[in-house]
Length: 364
Ligand SMILES: Nc1nc2c(ncn2[C@@H]2O[C@H](COP(=O)(O)OP(=O)(O)OP(=O)(O)O)[C@@H](O)[C@H]2O)c(=O)[nH]1
Ligand SMILES: [Mg+2]
Image (cartoon, rainbow, N blue to C red):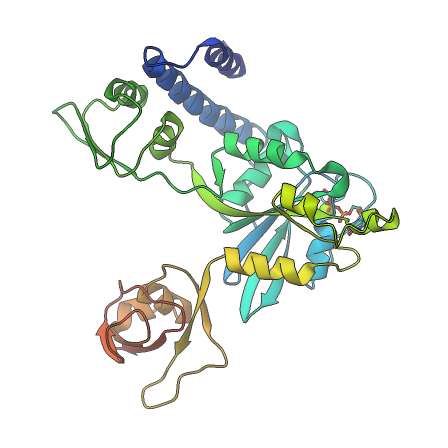
């Protein structure tokens, strides 16, 4: 049987199976099977179409990807935010190749990727979009005022290929073992039964493991924790072309209700409306921090902060300065909120905080 048919069959069975305590473990098994088949289908089809993979180098401090249906103004926005000169057209699929640009904001260099318009089913270029998304830091989900209802559809398509938007990684740890069966430890009360958890694990051929649950989980979360291809990204929704409403005297820039309803920022890429608000929101959601480097006996360099992702350690700082720095590293001295006292000596694994001053000592 074709893989697509098997997927359809399972979806149908899931649809017709009522959810209750007696069916839960069966549903768990079906969902796990579905997740595996979908991954398999994606793998096969991407090798079939020659695997047009992510081939754009990542530069800058973080990467944002613009995703949305054709003709909503993605390339127009890229051109407005960066010095890129992407082709803009009044017809669908103007963009056929991924185009990068750099937005400079608050001292950070943010790479923006303009990708081909996305259509339902992630066929053709869609899988390429998915592959670019996996290695981005933030998704800007874009549409225009004529198509405000596509957000959920697009999110569903991305969900199917393992991309989780504005969702936390489930706090589930599975430590595989050789013997001893499945032992489940939970720090909180669980709704799903042990039997269901075991059924799902069985689908992944896990028969011996310690399972540690640090929050209330559901079947989908458990499957996500077992699949390797899941990514968790922040997402900002954008509705473009609000100038069109203005043409019709609907005073959209004052009437923010559409934006609120869809939890989206309303912009006009073409007329340059609300772009500052968008930049600010993108910057905030990227969760970047600034640290200031200091040479021994000198004042910190407050003019050119180093931009890092929140959660970064001294090791990441070293890598950003020079590839040799990790090997030659002796110690770092840190002033700021991440340490107990100014000038504290720390190692490579020390996490730095926003506003820290850092001095690195290496072997000469
Ligand atoms: N009225 C209005 N038109 C816009 C705005 N932004 C873009 N457009 C127009 O929308 C059309 C499509 O713009 P593009 O930037 O090529 O759209 P795209 O999303 O990159 O499209 P694809 O590459 O085909 O996926 C062009 O005719 C643009 O001039 C806007 O803010 N207001
Ligand atoms: Mg385009």
